[in-house]
Image (cartoon, rainbow, N blue to C red; front, top):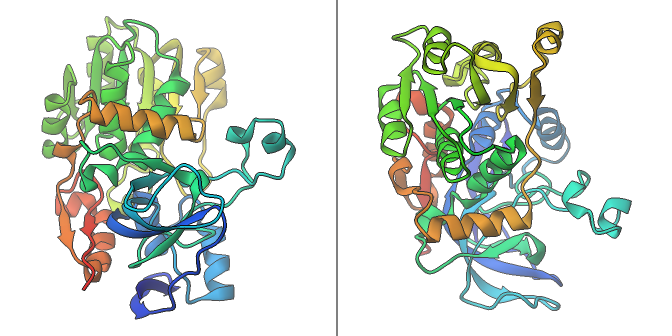
Length: 364
């Protein structure tokens, strides 16, 4: 089969490799639609972010490697011994972070808290190949009403569900979301159906602000055209928002906001409010902890998404309560297009992309 393999940062090639062998409690799948996550796209080009050191060590020790590809829709073509929940022909998506099934947390039925298990696409191959091997424990069945393209977004959406759940939004809470890429737009929609009152979003791209309004924002502020902190204070009667999601921070080389939006998020949260840290920054940052303490702010990080979160995303999309279609702006054809998808996703502002670029796989 053909698969994309990484020889180093910025050096990935489509090559012929042996197909994976079926194992107990695993399935073989044919990927139908795959998208690189924003984190994967940055790592592909050596931009420091989540798991950078881990990927660097693996490349130095074991290259060439099949890496990435945890956001996908695939069809099962063979099931291994012990598989009970799925059948050949089922379409599936997956959560990326898996329990180890051996630690005390896993053995005491708290596996959702485990951080030592493998990650699809990082510790084991993902779906940037014509055939992939996936553990049954990672999978969820995709509803027939959900397209292959939408299903490839479900893993990201499950992380957004976890972020909104972590915020514990109360009925009528005022919400601000910095960044209207895929996860910011997902948090917007999930917050709206979770009891949010006034929702204010912030981005620097007109196309993202327009999309935000279409998907339910009460106000979509372009940060290049106003003082967003002052405007948000004005829109919240001078006190600030109850909950602020920070989804825009990260490497400025990829058009992200650096740490500026985190500082703005802190400034726009009301005293006693919450800042939900969705972004990955790729390194240490300086934070005025005394300011958070003085204003009783809570800087909270989302829990990792669980199987229950992923199953909930299927229901949200199948029922139409979350609309993914408008956010999917770049769809490429054929496994040969994967490198282009990485380029677009790593530079979404340059290409006016909202969601990561998707690749529809076609087997010859």
